[in-house]
Length: 223
Image (cartoon, rainbow, N blue to C red):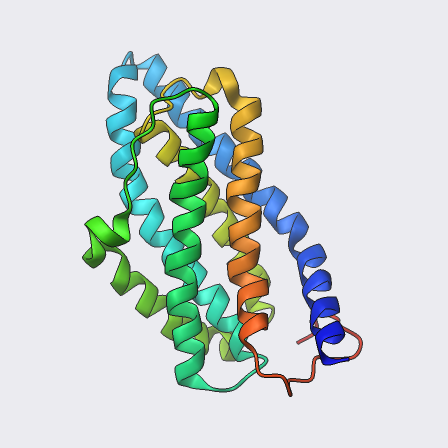
């Protein structure tokens, strides 16, 4: 019964967060389209990959931060164990954001025939990632006390930043002509964002919650 309750709760959370995910992905695509348009307008297309690479190193740590906030907040509202919540948020954000921002776009670029280059920030630049994950995990403990529906808002921001980071990785590390395959990029972004982000914000923290956790029977979002 406990497993069925947890599975049912996960499915309800996923369904409730779906509109936020669609909005975030669409906004991310629009933002990157505008940036690409400006580069073409200014005849600076050759600088777009390098600029995308630099922007990726801003959006990826920001994604880790937001992910840590969302993961920790989701876990902590079901199990009030501070150190365990921080550990779940810290390691969950680093691992799952790596899948979302790096491995999925890398694989998607290869499928589209681009010559992709693998770049794992947490290995090559740990000082760029670890502080954001740690601060985000601590902030996730505080946001549940100060903001209603904190996980929904942080998830929406999480999806937007994740979609931008995924596209920036595609542009910066191999797929320079992304607009002409925007349909395929859209599908890659959905996979790269929805699967890891929902796993990070919803599934991963709830799986880590102790067995005795009792979810609200009505499974509404008034909490």
